[in-house]
Image (tube, rainbow, N blue to C red):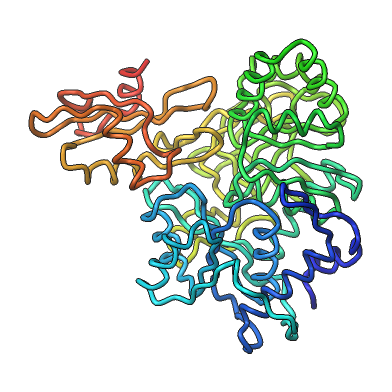
Length: 494
């Protein structure tokens, strides 16, 4: 059985699938190139049998063709993040047990040395692809398809394994709820190592036979230029991006502002997710674009679970109701259902829920309660709509649409020669949702500047995990048990 995504693509052969600055590519191009990549990966074997293939490719046609090629060869795709420093890339490659690394020439230096260090097969996207396509394996949809890494409350990121069947359920749920058709055209500006960019935008587009315009990186003026072209029907972003687009709109001339707003008016749907949307951002965007942004809620482990309606009233500060094929409940700390109007933990069940944490049966078992996935997020239902109240753990920080672990950052900071102790917290911020901040206790009399600290931290951590503000303190606030009181640390930055 061929994968449903591939079967559907075959129905749209001559239609444009991907448009980038390099040109436009049809579904036929995508099918052909991905079959060449699959042939190259197989190297005369019949099936990769769920071998993990890590790949680092900038957003664009090559990224999509590679992801599909891995799937068609029977492998599990492990997308790497273009902004991650070497230690984070190495962690994902070794933790996932990847046997093959595929890299764009831009990343050859860093990844070739990692492949050699771990004795892994290394492929460059610039290498010649085979002309003869080998017989590709039949892939059962219950097989693993994707491993994405998410920050856990215990520190190191965990690999979230989703099957082809999970992906199909996540995608068809959104296609139904948001009424995707093959006539849609979306601008893709989100990271492609993250569920928002991979599932909600890219895979939904290609499942629907629609067209995806991919930008290699976010730039507010470039995005506005594309919106002004007036041919887009959908747009999805995180609150931080809407803030940047509002700033660009405010500095534009009256004439350009008019064109920008007209471009937005031609779209049928604009969505915000991955972080809470501040009311003033929603209201400002509505005045600019005429769109009341649709907010939804999801996470790497479950895809999307809740959404405001496509048609009908959307409520500011709420994430709506359960999506098709998704069951949601709120429970107290004993796992008992809470009455309406009482806060509880969001738990989710459905065919879109992930298979397991990669080689971590303990964490997987802990993540479920009677077959329901425990999200660790607290919400309340009011007038039938869910309102998110926040994380149950103070150690998860949501910044610019990313979820980061304070514990993971603290572990890295403690390896700095001048840092004796530290506490990392999220501090509320209009643009980023939360800013990552660190209170530090230094050893010795050596001063530590923010600039020196940040340049050191960027060598160890993804840039969005690096604290934007530090505070040097004599000692960290602690409770009677000697545990650092994070709420008190947050107050130090306010």
